[in-house]
Length: 183
Image (cartoon, rainbow, N blue to C red):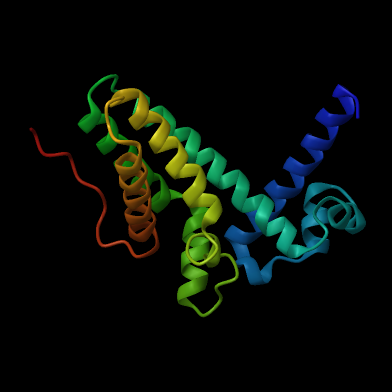
C-alpha cells in the first residue's frame, strides 16, 4: 500500500473511531450501532465492517486510541520534571487521574457500568492488558532513565504496581487528586 493510500486509510479509520467515540459518549456503548457510526463517519456500514470486522473490533480500536493518547500524556508529564523523580511521578499520576475524571469517554464507560452495562469496562479491568502493558512500559522506560541503578525486577514490580493502583483509582475514584505535599 502506498503512502497516500495509507494516509487515506488512517483518515478513514480515525473518522470511524471518532464517530464511535461520540456515540459512546452520547448513548453508552450499548447504544452504539454500526450503521449509525457509518452514517456519522460518512461511509457505508460495510466499510465499517471491512475496517473493524465487528463491534468488538471497533471497541478495541477505540480503546487503543484512548490508551495511546493517555500514555503519550503520561510520558510528557513524567518528562516535564527532569531529574526530579518525585515531581515527575506525582505529575503523571495527578494528570492521569484528573484527565480520566474529565474524559467524557471514560465517564461514559464508568456510568454505563454502574447502570449494568459493562461492555467497555473490561478494557480497564479484566481485559486491561493493553492499558497495563502500555502504561507500565512508559513508566518503566522513564524509571530506567531516571534511576539507572534501580534493580530491573524491582523497577518492573514498582511500575506495574503504580499503574494498577492508578487504574484502580480511575475505576473506583475516591476523590480528585490534590496538590502534592512538599518534601
